[in-house]
Image 1 (cartoon, rainbow, N blue to C red):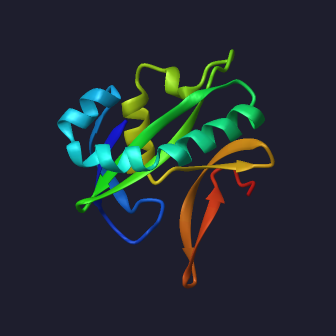
Image 2 (image 1 turned 90 degrees about the horizontal axis):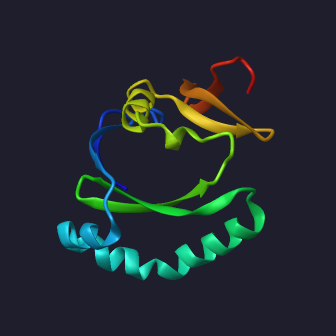
Image 3 (image 1 turned 120 degrees about the vertical axis):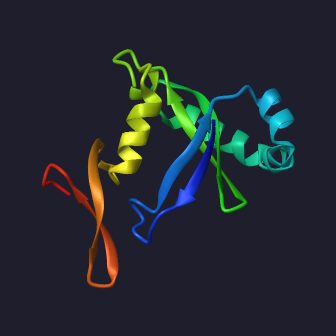
Length: 138
């Protein structure tokens, strides 16, 4: 996955908008964005370590997807676990891009609360930012 991000504001929950996204095979990503190749290859040991840990500790672990974010000329890598979940994950839905765009545009931030993923927003309280659940439970 490759995302372009544009800076919007100082709120951590709405700081960036998505300018583009693409899901590319790694070989094509390397051809289209050669600057990413060196960075990803340099992080292979970390990727393998995270994959081994997640495989040993995560139920329904199916692998990791490497996500590259580009913002203001800088690149950032995040390894996101993929689950083979019989109930189905949101990532399996055909409209994943529009769901993601909606969440980003509206500052929705998912957080694990006591083993359950809840949606919330980041709000400023004094000089600090805090995650607040949309369900009223944080």
